[in-house]
Length: 143
Picture 1 (cartoon, helix red, strand yellow):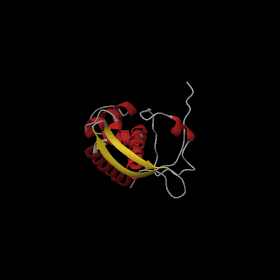
Picture 2: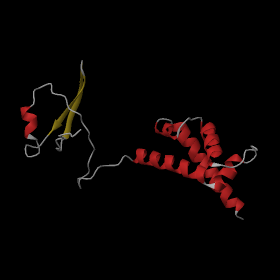
Picture 3: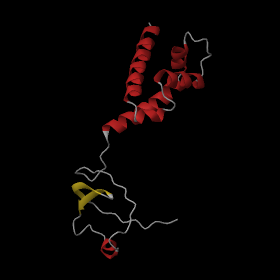
Picture 4: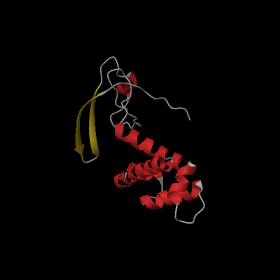
């Protein structure tokens, strides 16, 4: 399916609520306003994708979301690390493996999937603490 998308820059002017939902008002410079908008009926529906941009016209990255993305990647990488597997599974009697490390990590954090880092600040905090403990263990084990 081919989609005819229109692109323009808008500036948020206001937001309010109506009985139909949230009303978002954007100011669009006349040179940026696509002519198609003028021809569409009031009530026409659109799929909207928006990204906040900086003064250099580049998308602004949400620092918290980026930190969470890195945390998810770190959790996956750690579970593939044989030393982390050894550390997290020590004393359990379970043979070190990525699958076992992943299962114990999730169980320790009280999550089913790393995607829960998106909405679970307690799991993120616990993972950060766990990662610090592992780093300390690594330092001490190499002495």
